[in-house]
Each structure stands twice: as structure tokens, then as C-alpha cells.
Image (cartoon, rainbow, N blue to C red):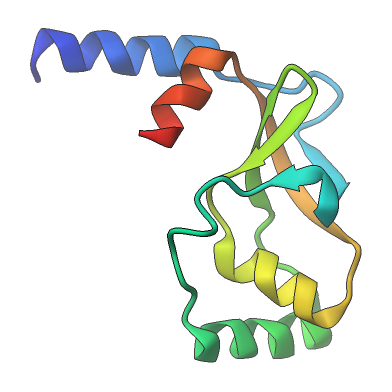
Length: 109
């Protein structure tokens, strides 16, 4: 691995911490910013299948969210997020990790 990539990975993982109050939180959907949501489209068959699964057994895997200065950013779990929206469920289980602005910028690249 190149030295610059090692440095970037080290920065990413040293700046990323699991929230001390427990890493799982139920967050309101409207509190989660989805900066890449407008650039990607979801597979609607997958969203529908997730909706059915969520209604039957609940959500198996929380989405990952970054907490940057009190603002929440979601970069994964796009299909799960949309399924919750379409089902009208206001809060979604999240694994929240504290991060700084540098980590956020790396996710936006």
C-alpha cells in the first residue's frame, strides 16, 4: 500500500470513534443528512423486499451514520433508509460514530 493511502486510512480510523453512550441510536429520518442521495438511485425491488422484511421481522442491520459536530450524515443503508421512509416509520436504528470534518470530506470524495 502506498504511504499516502496508509496516511489517509490512519487519519480516517483515528478520527472515527463509536459514541460513548452505546453505539446504537434510533434517529429521526429527518435528522439524517444524505449528501449522496441525489447522485444515486435505489433498486426499487430491493426497497420493496426490505419493506416487507421490516414489517415482518424488523430491521436486522442498523444503518451507519457519522456524527460531525452534532449533525448526522448517512452514507450507507440507502435502501433501508428509503424503505423506512416509504413505510412512514419516523425513526431508524443507527450505528453512530463520532467523526471530524476531515473524515466527512473523505466520505464526500
